[in-house]
Length: 174
Image (tube, rainbow, N blue to C red):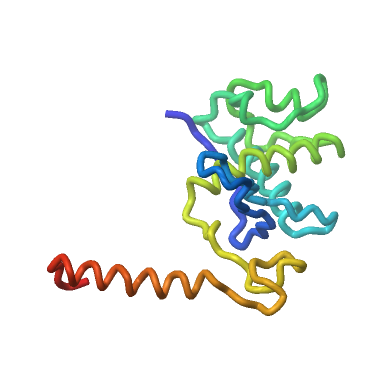
């Protein structure tokens, strides 16, 4: 049984989008989950993600059940660097072993890796990817300049239609 770690911040900033790309219903939508895409240098999401990844690696390397790293899930590290040496070990390290040192480039690769693999992990989790900010589109929201939200009206009409159809079909308790 493989041992894994996940980096999942409790309140991530998703700045993605989902837009209709064509009149053709078979054309896939323009979709970007925006997971961990808030790239401000002092973004808490970037800092938390990098720190969580590094601390998680340190923790896992010291567990007796540790038997190596899955290369496909690892951030790029420079050959011969202290991080590469630590990741190449196939068994646990001593509890008092020195912490792994990462270069600036390796830290940036970790942030990119967390974003790439984080998208997959977030899709499997129960986070609210479908929530939308109720502010003008020009400010990253989903409503027009008058703050009209046609989605709410659509849901209300659809709900009423479902009740009417259920009544016509003799379905009770809907």
